[in-house]
Image (tube, rainbow, N blue to C red):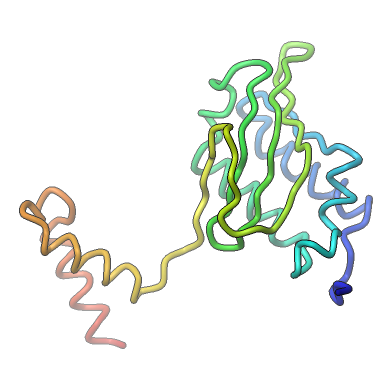
Length: 164
């Protein structure tokens, strides 16, 4: 099977690296990609081409949710960033060099149920209204729903529901 969408070029990856470097500079982490990463990002085993937009989103969400935690993993730590919406998995190693950490993305793949012995850093896509409503209703069924969702949340869901 040949992927029909545009391959990610070395130039594309360079732009993504600059973007990720800007994001993670706030926590003194420099992002690097291996040569293998470039080969694997365009591999047909991904079934669907990994796009620059997906990589950009992956770094943005990782920084927003886990940016400050990543340097706390320490030097030579290995982990996997997992995007639960797109099934993209990005194993990395954290190196300490010249007073800052380097997040070295070793490889990448699109694979459901990716197994790893390393810690997982999960990011998820935005929840649809239906998913949020389902979670809310599940919480209401719990013995102590007020601890999970406030009454204010209940009113917000009712207002949104009435507009849909």
